[in-house]
Length: 67
Image 1 (cartoon, rainbow, N blue to C red):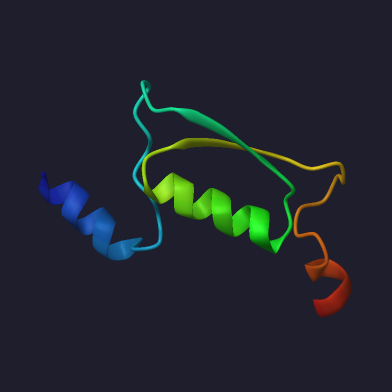
Image 2 (cartoon, rainbow, N blue to C red; image 1 turned 45 degrees about the vertical axis):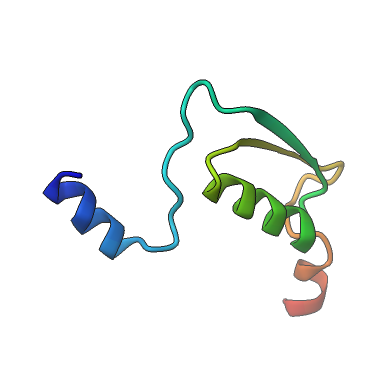
């Protein structure tokens, strides 16, 4: 691990590493709270994730409740 990677990891502890090209691709249906959380956890495990939603805005019920 290079010094740049160590600094980047400290500055962005929430950021998952970029998945490998050979990583499996998973489709998550729904960009609400559960779908986004699932996508984030899969991304941390090195899985490439595509999130699909019928709405044009992500967040599901969040924008209506917390605006």
